[in-house]
Image (cartoon, rainbow, N blue to C red; front, side, top):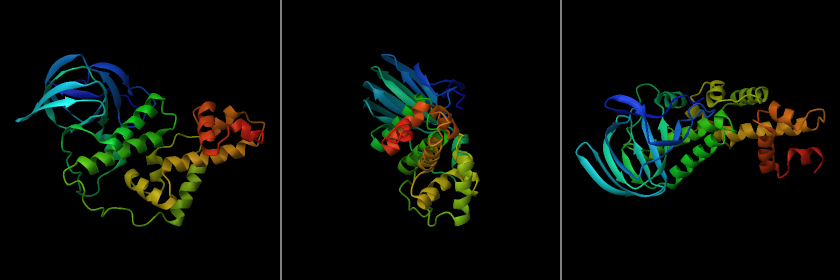
Length: 297
């Protein structure tokens, strides 16, 4: 569960970031990178904000005249809807604006990033290059997907939230890091072994009622979560989240044959948060509701 507010450093002291808080994943079931949504005042200025963790900021509504200075570099920009700023860990900036904005912030937590993509040996990630006012549709879609899932109460579970966060991390590192575009020498060349595949199938089947994480799954085959996601899709042809969803639905179909179980009980046994969640996903996969399936359409 996310438990901390997103922060910046001001006068070398941590303080909550942003302005008029509209939404926060703090204290919610969301298990991915922290997310917040804010409304800015009509105009204002902030002196020497320092970012203790990397912030990815998406302007979702409004336009403003924006002036910023980082080190000796000063810029005068026009920020509009669906523009993104990437403010790396340790980045310092003084800025002012004239015009209200609604914006979403995703904070890349280094501890979570290390857990999902542990470094091997002395290899370190390339540093991110600060970005102000970029437009990137795939990144916007990723952030919107995270926002939608978090605001819905994370009905798809830990694996989905962690997978979205992992995808965001991989995307910005591949797109905006120094040395981005390097060769894919680390791409998966071979899939999971037969024994590893069977171990995963058995583990998933035995824990369908649990909110499994990527660490739970990758730990069964001794791989890091980031490498596991790549090799899993190479092996099974689908993401871990989709595989889990399909396994749960197949078990739900089997359980629906037992009329002694209510649909609420079936949903609980296969790890869905509610009957309505099961119904929505079941209909999306099979084109009918669980009730209609039980009654032979």
